[in-house]
Image (cartoon, rainbow, N blue to C red; front, side, top):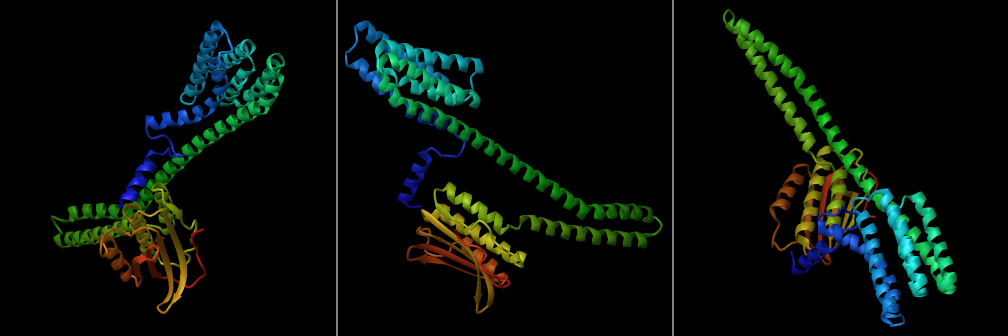
Length: 398
């Protein structure tokens, strides 16, 4: 990996991975600070008002104290509620307290403090149930307008749209976060169900393969045991039958295990998309492929080729983009299914093909396929071809 690729990898690790669950407590803290800190810009007007010296000493001290209490209550409510939610009654009490404190500050210190209602609106949208937030946010805007009639009507009118927008925007953000969490849980559940189904299928197949064979072996073993003292020739025949049945059972099990271990091209394409995206490589991978009539050996060989190519891109190339295409081609050797993996990286530091490419070449040659891999003008390209029935284009990077 080049120094530039290493630096890019370090930067990617330091970034907050959007759409992914927090991996550490530090990630969780950064996310909370990001969501909460963006709204602290509205504190500039109250702070400037206190620093300007327009109020008496008692008013300034009271203003700083009230501002500190307001910010503390706001951070406690929103920051704490983003993790383990606070009790519903306590949330309501804190929201009402923020509204009352904002009202007192505005009435005593002037229109510069009307921006505190933005925080009240954010707190309503972020912490209250959706139905309650739909009433509380307009209520906050209405309260600000009433206070504005006393301290500065024009300032209140200028802020009313902003108070409504950020409050309802926070309700949308909260719903989006909840939906993302639910989708993540659903995806984990689907994966667990798929794994359980695969275990059940393996259990059924092994039962079908071995149930009859083991029952026959048991029966013939009992017969051989009874025949052994008086009829050794018949017992020997039973033992020979046991050997034959056990060998056939062993062959069946090996075939079944080989089928389970055989990679599928569709699964490898999905895995390639995930692996490249996780490595911060812009992935251009076909979502679907039509493999009608393609022999399992050919599909398996292309799946191995795709896995090897994506592994090289992620680990060694230092690429920023990668394009995968699956095409049908008519060649001099007949119809071929072609897999092309092209990236804009260096292709690794080795001077010749590695063990992976050598083994891949041998695997493809066994089924009449070919492998081409090498540096291009703008990166590295791997092309694997296997025999396949003639058909149309089955997919390309979109």
